Structures are given as C-alpha cells and as structure tokens.
Amino acid sequence: MDLIVRNAKVNGKLTDIGVKDGKIVKIGKIDEKGEVEIDANGRLASPPFVDPHVHLDAVLTVGDPRYNMSGTLWEGIEIWSERKKKLSKEDVKERAKEAIRWAVAQGILAIRTHVDVCDPSLVALEAMLEVKEEVKDLVDLQIVAFPQEGIVSFPNGENLMRRALEMGADVVGGIPHYEFSREDGIKSIDIILSLAKEFDRDIDVHIDETDDDQSRFLEYLASKTIKEGYQGRVTASHTTAMHSYNNAYAYKLFGVLKKAKMNIIANPLDNIALQGRFDNYPIRRGMTRVKELLKSGINVGFGHDSVMDPWYPLGRYNMLQVAFVGLNLGHMTGYEEIKMAFDAVTKNSAKLMRLDWYGLEEGKDASFVILNAKSEIDAIRLMSEALYVIKNGKVVAKTKPAEYEVNGKKVRMEVKGVYE
Image (tube, rainbow, N blue to C red; front, side, top):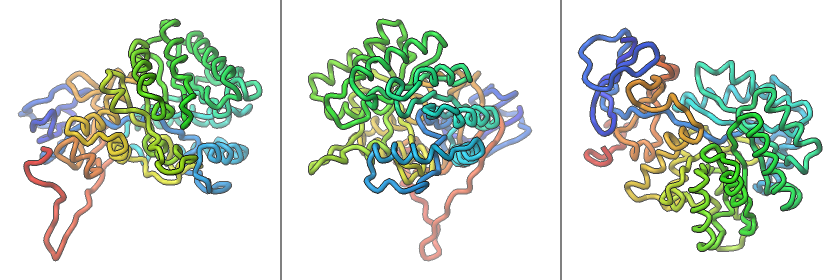
C-alpha cells in the first residue's frame, strides 16, 4: 500500500487505514507494510473539514481602505465597494491563495467561495477561476457567481451573472433582501432559478440576512424550488431573519423547506457579529434556528464566511472555531448536539456541496485528517490541531501540537475516559 495510518480512532475504535492509488482500500487491521506509514497514536481520523461559505475575493483586506467602525453589514458592503475599485488579478490571487494555505493547514479540503460579480471587468472571478485550477491538488474549490449589490438593482446585473456562468462559475448566487424593493428581490429569485436551469448549476443564495422579521424571501425561494423541480440543488445562506420570526410562521416554513430539500448555511462568526446592531437590550443573537432546523430533518452546514475582511475583522480560518461558536450560539451543548455541530463543518457541508468523493470509507478518495484529539467533541473543545492532512493519498500538511508544562511537568488538556 502507498500509505498506512495505524492506530487511528475511526467510529470510536482503534484501527488502521490503508491507501492505494489515492483511494481508501481498507479500514481495519493491516498486516502488510506501507511505503509511507503514520502512527496516529490513538488520535481521531476524520473526513476533512468543509467550508461551504466564504468570500475568498475579499479575505485579508481588513482595514483597507478603512476599518468598519460601526461593525454593521451595511458599512461592510460600502467599504468593499470602495476596495473593489483597486482589485487586480494578482491582488485577489495572492490573498486567496494565502487564505487557502491557512485552510488546508487546519484540515479544510473543500471550499465554496462566493465571488462578487457586480463588476463589469469580472476581474475577481477571472482570478478565482485561475486559483481553482492552481490549488486543485490542495483543495476542491467551488465558485459562486455572487451579485453583492444585487441582480436587478445593479446596472446590467443579469448580464454579468450570465457572463460569470459562461466563464465557468459553478453555482448561481443571489442576494434578494439587498435589492431595492421586495418586487426586485422576487424578480431576482426568478432570474436565479432561470439561469440555474439554463446552465444546469446548483444555487446558493444569501437570503434574509437581516434582523427584519418581515424579510421572507426564503419562503418564495423554497416554493419556487419545488415548482421548478429543483429540490436538493438549492442552498439558502445566512437566513438570519429566521431568528426573529414568530414560532407559528417558522415551523410552517420548516415544512416547506423540507419539501424543497433545501440546504441551510449558518455563518456563526459573522452572524453574531453583524446582526442585532440596531437592538437595545436584550440584543438578539443573530444566527438562524440551527438546532430546530436540524431536528426538523433539514440539512444545515456551518461556514466561515469572512476571514479578516470588511465584515469580520478576525478569524484564522479554523472550522473548529466556527463549530465551537456555533454550538454555543445555538444552545447546542447537549452530548449529541455537540456532535451535530461537528457534522455541520464536515459531512453536512459536504452533502450540500454534493461532494461524491467525500467520506472516511473504503472506496472513497483518501482525503482525510488526523486531529490531535480522541473524539469529535474533544476536537471542538480543544480546537485541535490537524496533525496530518491527507489529500488523495498524499500528506499535504502537517502540524506539530503545542506542548504545555507547569513547574516542569507536562500537562495534557484531556480527561481520561471522557469524550473518548
């Protein structure tokens, strides 16, 4: 075998993982020698992390040309419209590739990035299409044609979306709540579905990203999805207005979302930072109803959204940090609920991105991580290092774990017999 990982924790048991020709060929006791061998020493083997929602064209631009002093979504959009004027292909590529290296080092091997196409030159899209090809041995990259300033409200917006799809964007995006009027928002959703069907693309829409409980574009998107026969191919990102809906309406909406086989993406870091900005106390938390959606049988993933950009000034591109914040924000500290948060940054997000290769199973691509933890719960608790990151059977990243000493005695931040 090309690679054997020994003594790894898989599904709660210690075992070996055998890899040949980029595929997982055996999970179980392996007697033969491998060309390359790794001793996981009882640490957790996991499918890789997946980030289903980020803006790689904007990463690492915080403070340029100015900082977001109000911390609001709207000022972030204003700042980005200023920064966008000096975008170049080299600028976008350099920042995006640096962020991707951060991501891979921490176990992310699949990313869906929204790229702003409200720009007649489409320079950011051109740059990201080149990045996609250049990093394919490190990460699977999906590109969303994202109309940051609207499809109907931005001059020539529909034609720019069409051009973006012709150039090779993988997914159709949108932002109906940002259009000038409700009528324009509804029209933008009609355009999104029409383009998706014409180009045979999946859909991922920024939608109802507001505290306004009357922002209800999601119900129209779900209804349109059912009527157009596009079930399972549509993702709604953010949906933060849902935290302000009355319960009777929310639970009726869950039924429609389930019929539409809709995917939902919450972005805990940005959502908690950007929402509730116009509230006096009590201040709303801002994230959509993750726990309730999951318990209703709706697929939910967590995204990072921003990494040091006009909307969110922090971040190190660590999906365990996202899971940690998300589970606390969503009151998901029950034993099984913590595991659900881990799923939100792994298999749930892989499902919405429709990654056929994904999974720590025999016959799947040998793309997985060895985390410095013995369980999913401890991985989140510790925000564990990705000791080894393996892509198609090759080690693409390694991390040496931190070591702690108190009065000369080594300290491990684990409790024996707990979360193993």
